[in-house]
Length: 403
Image (cartoon, rainbow, N blue to C red; front, side, top):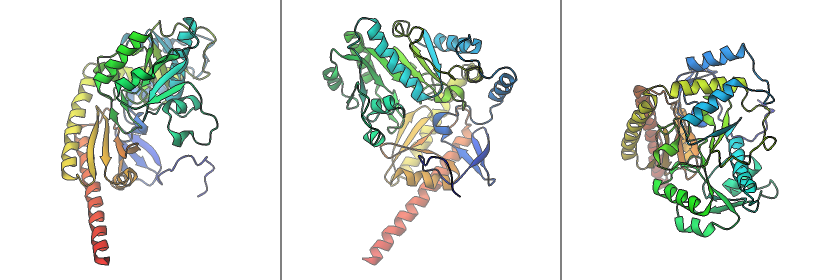
């Protein structure tokens, strides 16, 4: 069938018509266990009753008014995010890329407002992914994503991941900030050591730089804490948030301290749809669930069980899975075969997963996944890996027979 969609995605030949909890149901009536989570978005799974109630209630009130007027639900969500974080100020937008664009602008404007407009450069790290806009692509520095789009936006200095001495040498009088993901999601589920983040905090304090955390993928309970930075002992000055914040509804946010955000006065930034009543009602509903007593503790318990069971899979199938990575329910399987082959084999077992860099397959289940469903995920990975091993053995045997 011919599609008029711009062909920027290599889409799998399956479509879904409804979801329930950790499960998706295809248009052909097949049931899939969802460990892709809309790429870390569906933190409360599909059709969560509290989110449905918030959506339908707000839909009967008002959808959009613009930021020319007060939006009480936006004020409430900002208050709640600041009360549980380092931040004093929040800007709402519609996506992770927009959130990170705002983070970049906040950092640069801070120094301009401080009398140092020459301080606009931002240190970033190889393997990072910060979005698909021209500025966030430049921040990530991945040549594959930059090719063909003309001159690369300036102001970003890319350095190797994890070397403090290299960071020190990269700091110049033009440096404004350091930008990093606490866990590189797209880059291969690489967990940044706490000691490295602590060193970055110290360098920022020493040189008057701002520390920016990209928590678009790691935030909103994904690591078993509302923010991943909570597990590191390090507080940023600016933070980008999205994906899980709307539980499937498009929401992004830039959080900042009052000092970091001092340059962002009226007219310096804006968004037509950002902070709209629909998105804010659903964002508040997501917080209702995640901040309920015991919820995040339950996520941490599930994550421990999941990682232990994945370790068993690694032991059984080390010919296919060379390493288990990640934290919380942001988990990765590094493979000995092309990661897309494992993704395809998992989908054949009706388990959905997501490819990442460094030949890793990401598992991003809903935070409400049950222990029994985790067991079912393990069973399906086991079957997929077994099938791959059998195919590899048959190929080796055929090759030997040919020789």
